[in-house]
Image 1 (spheres, rainbow, N blue to C red):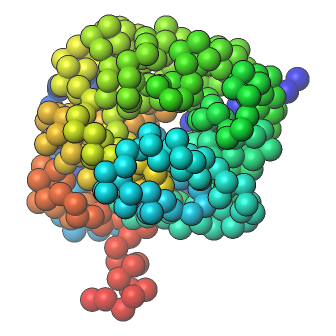
Image 2 (spheres, rainbow, N blue to C red; image 1 turned 180 degrees about the horizontal axis):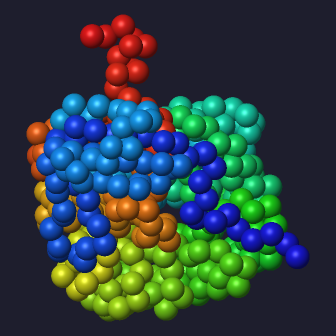
Length: 431
């Protein structure tokens, strides 16, 4: 029997013990519904054993036995569940800054792609690089996420566009998944990112379905399968073919949908029980209703609309009001959203998408975890994974209000400190 895909809840880091004390405000989205207020406790602690939260609450209720192990003084910082970035394309070679400059001069993303740029440019570059080089380039990028309080990052393939090259990309993610200085990684196979230059369209879809998906499953390299279903990418029928085969093989499903045109990708995601439908700038009322009814998470990527200067955003308010669960992610990639600052997405969501601060914070914690099929994360409840982010702000509202700044003080994954500002300051000689 062939092995199944990677469990999206897999945690290769051995869990640690840690008491985080003197937290200024402990902020937990809990299992609340969209629109609910966050839970907050002042002068609090979080006690983690074997990588999981065993207790949390006010310092006045700290169990005596909690003080016997490793301790971290939060010094009044705000504590949130570790942030979850549920949509990135972090495995690539070179940047595409020249394309950014061309867009600023008036050339559209679609025009650049038609001239051989865009995804095709990253594919050519990716294929020319060794797996070892890609590991080191990706490691440095993922380290930046940890510095921003992110404890879980979804990482897609999609710049190889042959079975062998897509497997190379996913091996990069696997090799990095054991690095204790990085966030937990959730790998996604995005073989259907684009039709490779010069390839037969029907033949390539067949390659993804008949060769790529079984090979990734056999190697156990991905938790999810994703498809770019949009104008200029894959059709609704092609996307359905790929996703249905992925479901048969046991993959979780995700879909890039309705970024540039409403093709029905959101409704397809809902019908197939996908974990998330992502982008959704052009989603219509039927798509909104379908996502809300199915429980498929709407993953919104406001940084992409900003970076591409689309002049419009996903209808976040309508999605939340309809009862859909919303996640926010960076869409980190070299072409359309070159940022690892998930905190900046909180401000964009409040100012451009119409979400409240509480809704935006829930979207980068609880919502992101649900978009990865892992409802145990994104909360500071008892029994949850010991993923905590500490921020040097007066209260959680400042994460949206004081925007564009990295407020992170420390990032704790599975009860182990994977990054702290104190360590960075010590390494650079700052005081």
